[in-house]
Image 1: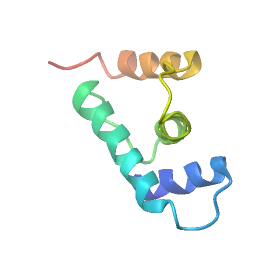
Image 2: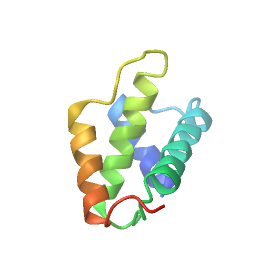
Image 3: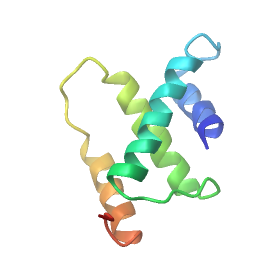
Length: 91
């Protein structure tokens, strides 16, 4: 899922070079790990809703890396929907 998300994130940010790929991939992998290990979500790489959420969340993480801003409401809403659809956070 990482390479597909990377292309979406780069398109959203307007990045055409590969200079930031390593950093962006690290953010994407961290987001995927957080969603699976902390939220208990099982993401499907063929589900466009999952792909776009990870891309949007990763883009937000990249753009807000040095700020203390909390997650925007639209991302919170989408995350809650994903958690509800998957049956909640597993313990």
